[in-house]
Length: 174
Image 1 (cartoon, rainbow, N blue to C red):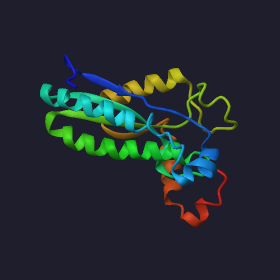
Image 2: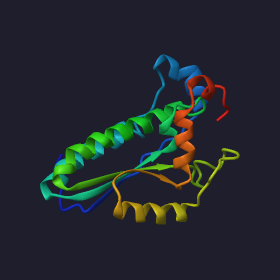
Image 3: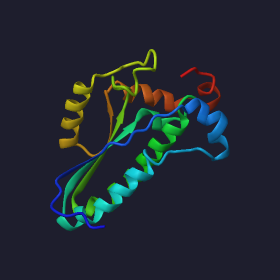
Image 4: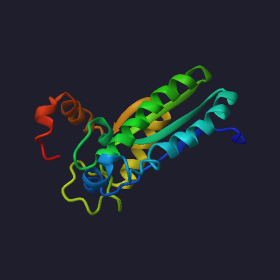
């Protein structure tokens, strides 16, 4: 389906959060009951439809909301993390496809934002308010491409977490 008009800026903000613990134990392990479509398939479908318009106009920006959860599979939210990891990989290829057309693609790897999605989750570190998140995301969207952590404290935190051996990581209660 063609996308009408000229696009300068597009946002893709997928995010469905379910009961990852039960999905992983009861339903996700056998492949039934997995609903990652809102995070990945839906976003990829929308971005795929937008790509020809961005190529035809010779430029634009795409900003997608990823998550720190996509950097390493955790026992509490591995389905959510898997969809965010898939989205990030998709965005890398999407950016490569659109680079010759002058389109910049940014994946914002968000930490917890103080919203209804995170209210029931106790003790989340480095929580950021929606207004602080939005203003920083907007600044980064205007100047960047690739990926960025928001808030920035997540870059060193996730760098360490990604480097942990699996045998140690799997013993952590995170």
